Length: 346
Image (cartoon, rainbow, N blue to C red; front, side, top):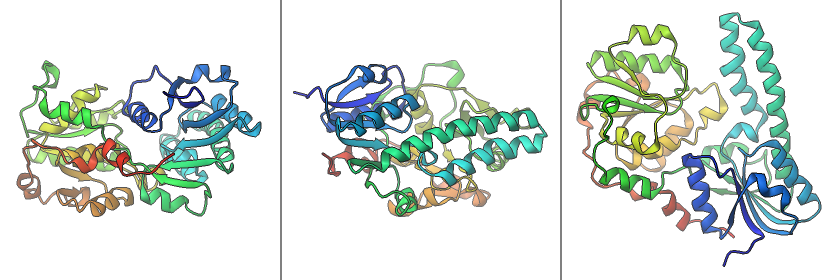
């Protein structure tokens, strides 16, 4: 029976792969799922607490308060974004995505607004790092490159837990029938696919050009704004689905010719990316077109994954043709649950 003072703090209203992984991890640790909104009512001493760096600042402040009062024995802090624990990562992320972009547009109002947002993000950085200075904290890190980067910057005990796909999602994908949605029907292997954030628009344009040269569709599922200049130039190539369910994403990954993962090495958080979509792609054995950044290169080397092409090499067109794989069996090395079986936690 789960003790009431062993808890996992999440927003139970959120639906995302991150939340589902937290639920699986909570089960392994024998933690009761508690909605963040109810945390302030918990006055009992806590044996073990699991919290992530996506939690709001008021929750982090309450954790600091309870910890100072010695009401928490052990804290697992799940790190999802490097910029929540590292100052340079936060500044590089904000500078490239917001300030630099708006400087090019000469939009000084948005620059001022973005600086205000940056000040607000500093507060989360401060709170997370203050929690990490406690002796009862274990930091759960999603990649080895990130762990190496923060090794001397963060002194807390660290455990590696990668953002891999859930077994049930992959198995359902392999067993399920094609998507019944007239807006998401594409001929098998007749398209290149990107899910999630675009991250690198210069390389995104190169993929558009590449797909056009092969007379393939480039299907993109993202909530990122794609400039009209790009959508107009590649109107016959680029297909945007908007945000869709993870089940539909995996179906589109399964049947694409190549899957795309783009990152910008100017942003430390992206240079050392801990890409969940990369693991989905590798789990399904897809040919991958990726940015040549440390986070991606490390995983390719670590798993000896050979079925990929870096963006600057994509015009070796035969690589895409020769590496089509009809996926019937998933690679179990990339199941989130499988790695948890090999990790020693509380």
